[in-house]
Image (cartoon, rainbow, N blue to C red):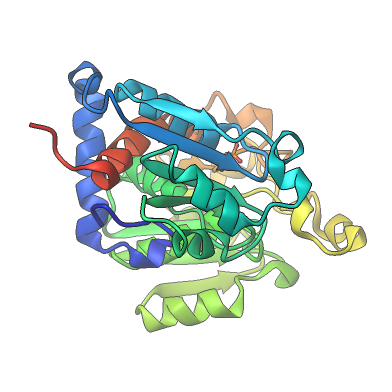
Length: 305
Ligand code: CP
């Protein structure tokens, strides 16, 4: 993966994933050892959609490696507002930075951007497509909590528009994982993702209810219904509020179940879950720092001497 772009989780082999996760664990154990490794490096943050975690954790990750960041700012305050194309923006920004983190509402935008620049492009979410750096921190969290083999995971909520789901499902095919997808019929995994999973030999089952599968799960990955992606607000309202869990729901799950969520949540995990041992979602978000430090190290240059 070194010096290349990170566009989709399908490009990640088990060896690629383990290299980043092992590096993240090293960083986690001794962050100060990495504080001056990339003193001259600049990371460009180009977010055409809102973000809290991805943007701030990439910013912090670069700074904790000794580097700096340059931020395009929101669409409203950049020259995107004047009609500049994505290709032109990327061609300009590559002259300012050693790597580009790109979030964009259009599926395929990161792939397109990567075709115009020579510095690594990291897809930080392209519409309802992919979000592979989120997947790396999800896998790190699962590995720390449960291990990544002989695992049953339930992935619940908006499987149609949820890009974190698509990336995670692809990456999990590298491991011995039984994947259970729980959603209303209207928010099933897209056909293209199901096709890729079948081609990769994934062990998958689809459900419309959590109850029957919950007792066998080691991980429950809950997702937000992606209101901003629905073409019709009435379609959103028809499914909003379904698949909500609370502390009582989890009484039927394993005591060491890991409840995860890429965040932000709206109301799909009740606040009474937050104080339970099973709640891993804030730890999961915090893992974005060592994992993104490790990813930047991988893409910018490799193991420092
Ligand atoms: N998980 C995630 O992508 O969060 P943000 O939208 O806040 O970056």
